Amino acid sequence: MLLALGTAASLPAHAQLTAPIKNGDTTITVVGNRKPEAEMSNWYVAETPHVIVFSEKSEEESRETALNLEKLHFLLSALLGRLDEPDETIKIAVTMIGDVGAFERLRLTDLRWQYGPFPKEFAKTIYYDPREDGSVLATTNDGINLVLRPSRGRPTNRNCVWGNDGDPPLVSFVGVHPDVPIEEAAKLMPVNELAFCQSAESRLYSGFAQNYLMTYLPAAYPRWFLQGFGEMFATMKAGENFVEYAQLPPGFFQVMEHYGDYPVTHVLDGRYLSAKGRSWTPFHAWLLVHFLYFSDEWKPRLHDYLNALARGADLQSAARAFGNPAQLQRALKTYRGRKLQFEQMSFPPERVPEPSVRRLTQAEPGLIRGRLELG
Picture 1 (cartoon, rainbow, N blue to C red):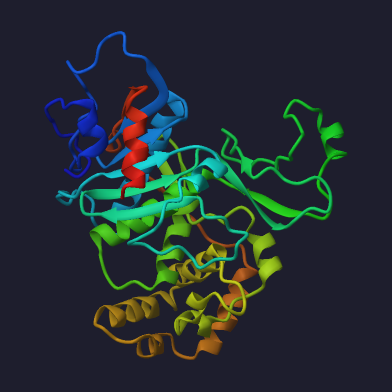
Picture 2 (picture 1 turned 90 degrees about the horizontal axis):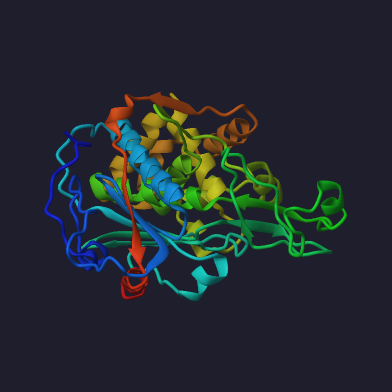
């Protein structure tokens, strides 16, 4: 059974942090190798059958992140026909570390995965590496304010915090304390600025979905499809017995108004990869894949296109599966103005087991950072 917890011997703490662990195994329990008086850090590790999460967030937040990623694994397995399939792959190790500045100072370089290319306004706060000893995924603890048009007044704080109710927060501003009454804060707001908050969890969900596709259904996917597929699940909302996906991402209309439409022909022939001309963003990728995925007319063409690439066809030959690009461009433009579809899936809560959680010692977080930097 795919999501059944396996049994495993207890391992030393350092093995948990550095050694690969197969899906289904649980190794969170540590005995004998730590003195009772060991000084503890503010880090937690939460583990499920398919993911290990290292986080500087609270114990409850770490548990919730791991649980939601396990729910996302269940959702993807159901959508892609892999429920209850045998799973011998290595668990993905997820790390949530620092604020935007601290994350950037790590200078993590993507060697086996490519991000974008997106405009500089879409700061890179995600690191992914599909390593042989287990995939690694990392992002910040808090979200980031994406500033499409800078303020002529007080600047926007780069960091933002997503609300516990799942609603996007108001953009936070440098020098404005959160306890300041809204009437007073309004006087200090930036002038003529266009910005919105992108949650750290959305980056994890997007990267996790891409990793799932490349792990369980590897193929010669074009980068635009991987990006759009990931973004479809970036807005996932999870309850006790349901998950929603493909919701409209926060900031979508601001991005589309600011950057405008993107030529479909430049996507299909690969010109978007040069980062020249009009700006290609994660939101354009979301729109294109969302349209193709939910359209009864166009989804079969998407399958034909991906199958052609899998057989070794070049971009131009594979693109013939879509027919006339001008027709696709018109359909996409019309689609953008509709009330866009999303889906909700219910499931028995016991299909997604509770994570095991423990607090790390002061010495252990160094191993986590070292594993990321030495990738």
